[in-house]
Length: 281
Ligand code: FDP
Image 1: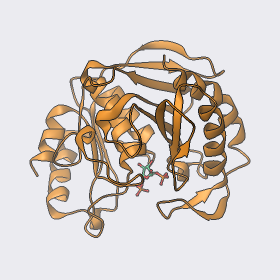
Image 2: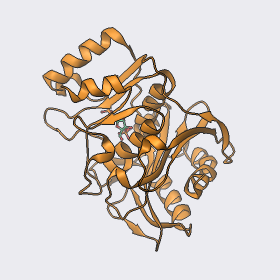
Image 3: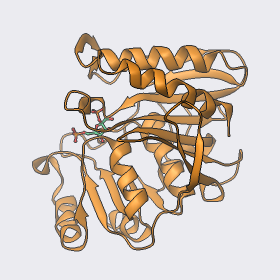
């Protein structure tokens, strides 16, 4: 396992232990204009300190800070320290998302050599997909670990089930485009709704039961909500490694050019046939 993920796993008990006292909002906004929780800021600082201390890490970027932190030579790590942190108040699942890019940031998903996430659910798990520089994500393998005590315990390969069962789409229905809403009406007849409001937890449903997760472009925000470098590309890498597909509506999320560190993108990941239907809209 890449030492970035060993380090993330080792930080998990500390992150978990620090959450109960950090459910309040701060007066600060992150680079995307969202109010930060004390937990967002704290998890970001903890991961920055531990990941930049690694010899193999040359840069650290996070959804919670404006600029890239220079740490010398090595891979660039892009982190969403607490994905779905608005679930903290209601005590619902959240995650940590990590992309390891063999390129300076901002970089597109073709620069990813590994990506993964921690899911703070009833059990704390971590899924890691690892490949090689210059190789497609479909050549990578995805593995699930239990990381309760900070030591990853392999619990098996992650493979997207062939029969799709669940779907979850973000955003308010009145903000969806007509075409997208019509597509969701079809999907409602075919699959079962599973939406919890934290991308990692919702994608985990799809990885476990098969189906599709998406956060579409909205009427007044065609670029959607999720961030390409911190969320879209890493999760696409994991899902493609697990045998699924991804799209921003036109092409794999791994092929979307990255021009800005905090750029947003529509995100769809999961079953090939459903991803193709999104692309045909
Ligand atoms: P959150 O704002 O709580 O951090 O990345 C942002 C995110 O959560 C995703 O985890 C989640 O999928 C999405 O936003 C949920 O947005 P909505 O509240 O608009 O459904």
